[in-house]
Image 1: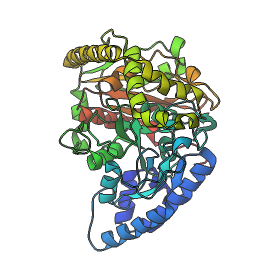
Image 2: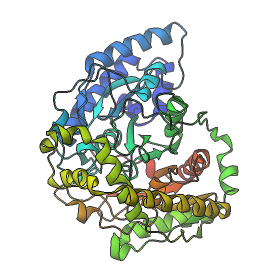
Image 3: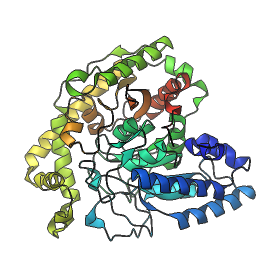
Image 4: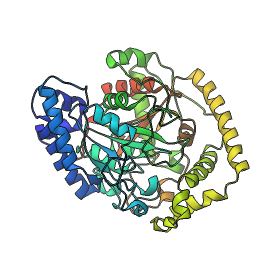
Length: 464
């Protein structure tokens, strides 16, 4: 990557370059579009490139900055959003042939906030079909990680992570219902932020599970993720689940704050459920934090059947979300038979079973609150194995065993996935930092502190 292109690897660097006049917003956008076209061609990272819109936004941004109007740190910065965000006048397919001909008539709240902050949208990124399914279950084809193009970039925010990892854009929006930001962040060696449930409006975003869906960010660093979160968070009457206030993290005292945090970690069985090399990288990350004055202590999460409860709630809610395509027969256009089965199977879940699952969820909330009386943050592996080959099945990719992943998403907890090493084969590994609900700031502080004493997040895949 030449010096001009390097600004696309960091939101901070891109912002500084714009404000010193080299390159200008239009030139930066042209660079982003060129690199996005390459990422799409080689990785299948994009669903739609919005070149005309991007160039018009870039011209406006350049004029505004030249005339003294500065909308903030995202002004003039190229970005992308996952294909399940509505972008007015742009195809809105959600990775599925079900919506192959749909064009968004509205604008998602998060997209509108990015536009108001001056960000320049270069395209929508690829995703797995209806935010679920195996690597090849998508109308755009399996998205690959730039670290090894024979391997998957992760789902369902596949393209958002791949686009950032390839240096096409400094940041992209994704969503997570159950692992869909943490997984691609880990597989692509980027930083992923899943904010607390309710932090960011989901208005104008395809619904999978009303009580589990979260809008988040994929970027190069925790600092960049925090900058984007500050622009898109806040109360929105169009999404009744949203909470008041935004998250503005000042990182000047991150080291002091990090060393005051009580940090726990969850030990996993990598030999059975994952890859011991991932476990070794996680152990080294803990040792690095301990040496820097943040010693993690092993924690035991409350004993509940998290995966079973999450599966019950998700199955029931996604069936309600996709009821329309079942009734009109478009469910037959879903590419993956297992995905069709998931949606249809949810209709077999009775009200009593769903309510029992919700009651158990209430007990989980209570007992995790007690756990967070002992710890401010919890650490875990973002994934238990590195990026799989694109032909792998979902059962091979996610055999189970990740103790805390289902709990995080059931309880709406915030998390930041940070790169923490590589396997011997050169595949990136991620560590996640999980906080209590609305504890986004502490998770970001520790993530930034870790990135201030390591360089894993600054590595770029060869050739990109």
